[in-house]
Length: 139
Image 1 (spheres, rainbow, N blue to C red):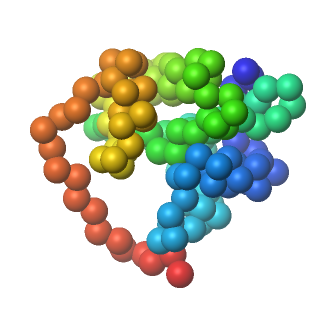
Image 2 (image 1 turned 180 degrees about the vertical axis):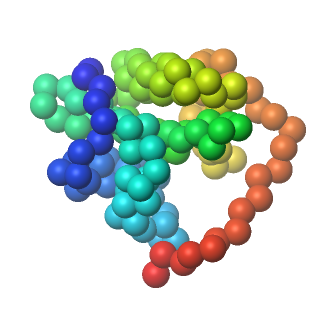
């Protein structure tokens, strides 16, 4: 798999990938999520290509204190081949290059397969409660 930064012409393929991976939600407009990411550290929005097809994506960011990962996706037909691990390794390296001391991520509590994936990569469940507040509605 070749990893490269997201390009605007990837948008439809990325959203279709997110939909195949069940990452989209009605309250988050994926087009707006992409446009927002492109205004902040767009170099940390990566995609993976295999044989000319977009098969993976990840959004990452660093706020000066913690790194974050969102929208890690690998095409369901190409999962369990190490592609997610490759993308995470690339993100971790890019964040290390920015002197990011810690990487956080959130996942839905009922997604045990994804939890197991991250645990295999060395991530641990922390005794925290995640809070959120919508500031701008995606109508």
